[in-house]
Length: 171
Ligand code: RB5
Image (tube, protein in one colour):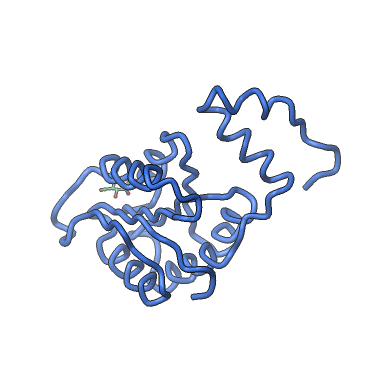
């Protein structure tokens, strides 16, 4: 896996135990540091995915390093992403194919990657992780748009984002 090694905060529910363990192993093999891994060891240990999302995302944000990343998995990736995206500062992207995994970083500056253990094979999930890790945020017009996302939940950011209209012809 290319891309600079960073610190990862990982969590998942009972719907993605094998996926979580596999991706943690791949991250470590790629030289990344997994500083937090939350979730059951056994798929029969049912756990509520919002609790996992909150623990992982709050710990990630508390660390304060914008280079650090979160990885959240559940049965589909959907519920845990919905919960994560309620937390200001978290931009969680559910991905099922490589283009979205890459563009979640290049255009959306996603800091949390979400996937579903009942949706993806391990090989595809690994490819999605690699695409996410190797892509970099492009900034520019995308930074303005990400600023507008953050302004939705942060009144302080709202003033500057409002004064930055999009320009004709931008993609
Ligand atoms: C758990 O059964 C399941 O609902 C959860 O893993 C996830 O898929 C929710 O979005």
